[in-house]
Length: 219
Image (cartoon, rainbow, N blue to C red; front, side, top):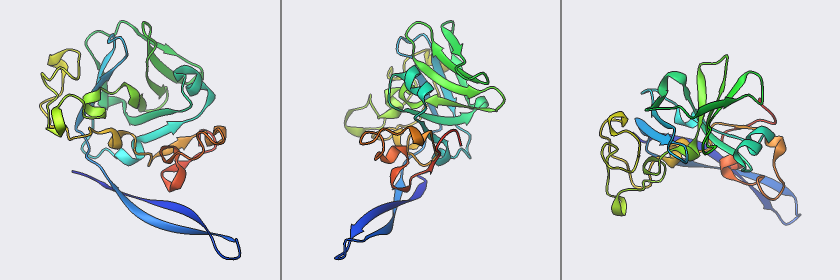
């Protein structure tokens, strides 16, 4: 099923008197949603499986953060993650290289001790975690692994990697994958006060144009 996401685009229009007025338009964003996805770190030492509940809200689950901690741990200007219940996420196979770092006392940041990939961040007192969208396997993220958009399957395709026995049941992956479902920008955007002028202050994924809820800090 493809949910319809309604968001607003705000444009600034100049009239003859050079006075700004805002015109609000609506558009509909549609995307396919997965039942399951797999992912892992750069070296392959950590592999995970996410099984989304039937009522999972893919709009609210899409989050971004521009805090200094996320920037320093990822090396990027912002973090793109997706929130799920802790029960929906599990590691498959060995996870001997799993380590956790606490830049904030009550928040775990899970990463691979061999390659350094950040897998998720998780508040210790909550029942959810936010996995990093960049660690999702290309089959699910961009549809890589099947020619010209022909539907492929997760089991035995080789695109997802890891232990085949731990792969999700056979499921067709649409052309382009599920990247929009995982990173649609319709959820919360944290630490927008850290936006970099002319760089991250005009990106729709980070809440510009009316997508999602922009937060100056954690809230």
